[in-house]
Image (cartoon, rainbow, N blue to C red):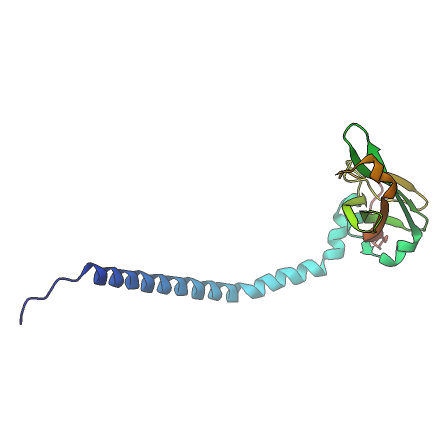
Amino acid sequence: MGPQGRMSPLSAFFFGLFGVGAVTITGVTSIVLYGMRVIDKRSDAIFGIVGSTVEHLPDLMEQLPKALGDLLQDRRAFEYAPNIEVAAKFLFDEKRDRVRPSLVITNKGSEVISLMAVRVAALNAQKDAVAEWTETVATPIGIADEWRGPLAPGATRYVVLHGDWSVQRSDMATLTPSIEVSELRIWTPGSVAHEPG
């Protein structure tokens, strides 16, 4: 038998590439199979924990501080929107040559608004939207400028929106606001009992 010829660099490259590929595929397959085995063994425990948490949720809510417990007692209620009056106008800042919307929101109903977001569009004379803003005007708790707190029945809130838009003063007369309530939640006191204070 004659001497064997040396492997060409191209052949060595392909053999190495296929070798690395085979090892990678084997390793990944082993990891996936092991992971599936672990998940299968642990799924009963995970579902047990979730079931237990749901079962004890009323007890957990009773142990929360009142402010946090109240956050969990609201519901989306767009049907309440007719009880809310929202008016908007545009303010002009002479120094910055900017327009900012100013809102007046009045809760004319008998419910506490825990969350409310409003979208305002500026329409030109042709009724095309040339700018838009979104602002949260009521939040479950009031702790900062952005978190204004709930809106009580009969209350009126004044809000100047943060966004601004460059416009000529002469164009101000043709701008009209279009207002949309994009989120509305009503606080609904539940049966959760809290200790006084």
